[in-house]
Length: 152
Image (cartoon, rainbow, N blue to C red; front, side, top):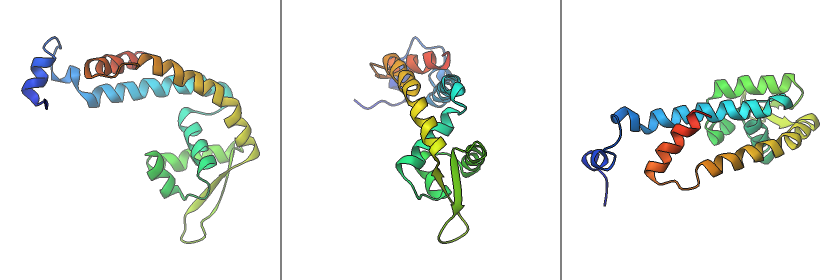
């Protein structure tokens, strides 16, 4: 049975108000909490969660332009460019001009490969912990899970 707003209110009658069940609010809070958690776990490796995602994308899909990578990992170009510059400054990536246009192509360096390999076990542990928190993703459980993640 499809849910409309009346069904949702009836289904979730124990909730405080519409904003309490807002998927946008709850997913943003969860995303921020997951980011803080990942950043904390990856701090000893000198990278953030976003930077590990960038390094992984560069490793798995070499030759992408900043625009292509930005689209692929759902990160705005400015944030991606800023993080690429930090990764380049730390010796984890190199950047070269694109063959066509004025774009840049990033590549993982040997040091970048080493930091990815060193960070992956900790990243995997963090992923496993989060999977346990979200083992039964029906709507009520998802909202509760998003709230729980926002407090991580």
